[in-house]
Each structure stands twice: as structure tokens, then as C-alpha cells.
Amino acid sequence: MKALDYTILTLVIIGAINWGLIGFLQFDLVRVLFGDMSILSRIVYALIGISGLYAISYFGRIGKAME
Image (cartoon, rainbow, N blue to C red):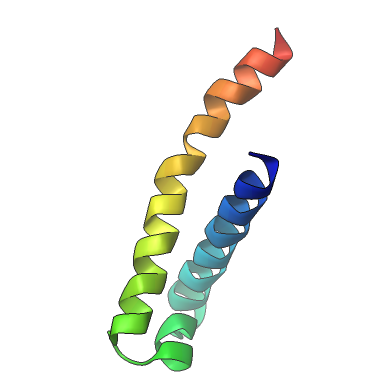
């Protein structure tokens, strides 16, 4: 489970960096690396989105760890 959590966290960080680049520099790194909405870029976006949803569970685990 720990390896999955680190993988998910890495994908969320990559997504956050990409959104920061889009917001500040109008530069979409995923599009540049994988193409404009190619199947590969869509998979990357989907994985990052699913990772963000999974990362919501971190809140529950943090709460349990603090008890």
C-alpha cells in the first residue's frame, strides 16, 4: 500500500506542477511531451485525475494516525 501511495502522490505532484505551468506560463508540459490530446496524453490526464481522487483518502488516514 505504501508504494501505491507514493506513486499516487508523485502523479498528483506532476499534475500540480503542470497546472502551475499552465497558469503562470501558458505551457502545458503533458501536451508538449505526449501530443495534443493524443491517446497517451489522455491516459496521463486520466491517471492524474484518478490519483487526485484517490489522494482524498489521505485525509481520513491522517486523521486516524493522529488519534
